[in-house]
Length: 244
Image (tube, rainbow, N blue to C red):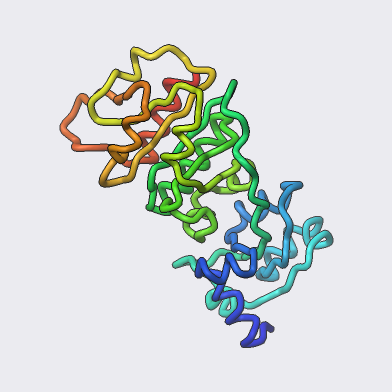
C-alpha cells in the first residue's frame, strides 16, 4: 500500500516544475513501460504495478524495484483516463548537445505545442531513423505525460534539444527546408541524405523570422478541400517522400 506522501509525490510529477526539479518523468501502460525498461540508456527509479502485470513480467520484476499496488492506487497516481496496469518513474535523459548536421537529416520544431503532435513526431523521427530533434523553447515539454505516451518508447532513442531555434538555424551551413502551404511540391523533390526540415506551429505555422533563413519551402499537394493538415500527419507524409 502506498503512503499518502508517496501518492502525492508521484502525482506532482505530472507537473513540469516538479518533474524538472526532481529530474524524473512518468511512463504508463504495459507496452511503453516494457519497451522503456528494456532500453539500456533508461534509468528506472521505481515501477508500480498491479499484481497481474508483475506475474506476467517475472524477468523484469527481478531486475527493477517494483511495488505491487491496487487498481485504486493506480487510478489515483495515473494521468490516464483509463489507467493501465503499470506506471514507471524514470530519470530524465541527460541533455545532449546537437550532433553535427552534416551528413544527417534533422527535424526542427518551431513552437509545436500540442503534446500529442510532439510525441507522434518523436515517434516518426525514430521510425525514419532520425536521431535528433531541435525544438524551440516554446515547444511542448517532451516529458509531459501525453508526449511520453504518444512516443510509445521512442523518447529513449531520439535526442530532443531545446534552444533558440532562430539563432541555431542561423549558425547552420546546411540546406534548410520549411513545410508551408505554398511551396515546391514534395513529390518533385529528390530523396535527401542531409538537411534540416522545419515543422511549424499548429495554428500559426513557421514564424516569419525563421522563414527568412530557409533555402526552400516545401508543400504537400492538396487534392481535396481540407484547409490544413495536423502537424504530425504532415511530418509523416513529408518524411515518407524525402527519406526514400
